[in-house]
Length: 304
Image (cartoon, rainbow, N blue to C red; front, side, top):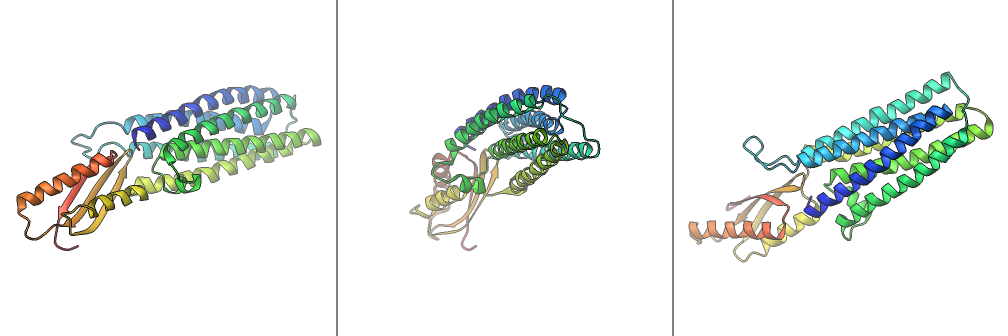
């Protein structure tokens, strides 16, 4: 993640934190007043999302710590760890609790009180969440360049933006579900639909959390740099006049930084001192063009 990627992530996190906290407080008041299970599920979801933004911010800050003796490749993967924790919390605190609350309301249905208040709160919450989502999409647009959103989502190494996008999308869908089922409960005078809405919200949160966890898992295991970055690295090395052959290139993403290892062949007649100078110059050139490359190890060899 470049400096622009870091600032974009912070922008998305701050947008989401403010929106989720405001919505959580409104939902809590409405849930207490209306006795709505869907509203309570949504309130818990919003509190979980608010706490999740704090964890994402913590991970982002920890990932910027400088390398030391214990962690020579830095602390970049801290952002992946905390993003994965957020996915787990979204699954458990958000999804499972919503399903539990819905099931409880199915077994013990209670009539809604002043449901119009709940519908009003949900309507306002939808607007706020849309604003938060637009803020997240704006942050994504700052870093995705010419890629489509789907292509960016498939290849990005920015864990924070993936999580915030997933949370905001799930929040809007959950709010719409809550609005629809509370509305049906009012029209039919049957609180069972409110309970069903809570269960549906839980299912949505679980699906989104599984997707987010699956994307973050690849980064935790050790993902390569994004395809276009690898392509630039290959071009820089292959276009060097002294490189006779590029055997292989390995890149690993460590949060905002990239570790690069490559094996190349230089002319056999080239003196050792000149070979070392050429390798050092090539490493310097790569780092100059790709600021995210934090570690560059180029090995001289005669075969793969």
